[in-house]
Amino acid sequence: MTSKTIDINTLAQHGGSEFRVGRGLIGAVERSVTFSTPTLQEPPVYSRLGNTNNHRELESMLATLEGGDEAIAVNSGMSALTLLFFTLARPGDHVLCPDICYGGTNNFLAKVLTHWGVTTTFAPISEWNKALTPKTKFVICESISNPFCIPQDIASVSSFAKRHNLISICDNTFASPVLCKPLKFGFDYVMESATKFLNGHADVIAGMVSGSRAAIAPLRTSHSYLGTFLPPDQCSMLLRGIRTLKLRVDQHSRNAKAVSESLKVMPEVEKVYYGTPPNKDLSFTEGFGGMIGVVFKKSVSMEAFMRGFKLIKDVPSLGSTESTATVPAFTTNWFMSEEERKKFGIESHLVRFSIGLENPNDLIADIRQSLNHSS
Ligand code: PLP
Figure 1 (cartoon, rainbow, N blue to C red):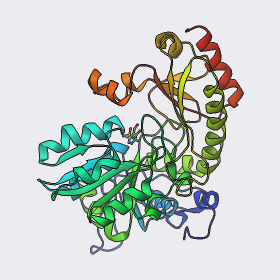
Figure 2: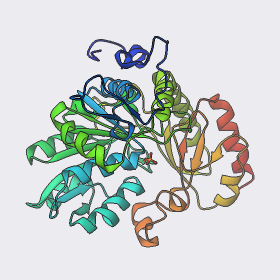
Figure 3: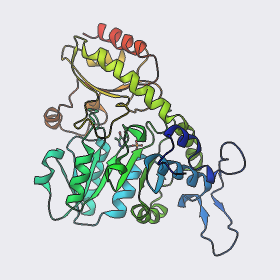
Figure 4: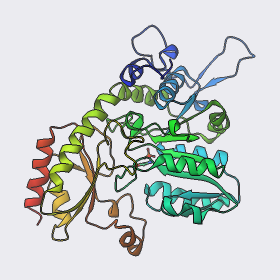
């Protein structure tokens, strides 16, 4: 199915249906680890190779949503990074990555890839020109940055990559294809933690990578041997989550906008990060999603505040139907030194909210009552 003219809500019901198993309204889950093929000449079907019909249906859906030729479903967002870099990077290569990004990405590049002779400079995107070396081969960024939740000027990143002939990767986890389609802006690869908004129900860990046929081809081979495949049950669960992706993300956006506006006028709040992309006419035409970064005043006891919610859950994940909140200094960015956290403003009074599908007035009341007991 082509994604050019069809609404994303329609695509989310029918994408990949050509690979559905059986004649049911939804595809049956193929739990068998392997299948015999009609002739000896055909390649083996073995679940670890990611080539059952469940994989094909999900991957076709993902490619359709992201606007890629192909997609690969993997078993976590981190596996998407593993697959990309362990396939494409070579010893001596250099990566440019924003200084503020998801902690797992930072750790993977700084603490794992470095042992394979691949170095990374973490610097603000505006300073990448200075950080560029003859060895630079990759740029990676997030369409909405973690943990502050600020939309990024991904068009500039993509044109920087093109100008310098670099492989460009955009992590679209916070935005989802409903809000942003990095491939449209010329990125070579879009990747996501499908654990978050794509699945949306906090019951599947998964990831994905999409791009052109030529870009995906080398990943497809190494995917077979890296063990990054997503089990068929999880493919089926993820497909179910995707059916309501647009409805959920639209509501997440509406709710987060309402909550962010209330937060802005609360006396205990120092700063709210929501929306305001660097370049308004670019990617975010349908809202800014469910993620809000909030800096509270030092007078707020964060221990009492985070434990005082009656509805919002104090957990580090995001993108679910239920609202969640986390203090990145103690979760996603725990690995940073105190000086680094200070430098970037990722201190103990920064809270990252993932606004769910509840009535926003109930969420605002929950934040208000918890603040009343915390300051
Ligand atoms: N990218 C971003 C922006 C994330 O927030 C996360 C996880 O929180 C990941 C990647 C990694 O995803 P996963 O937990 O599915 O491995």
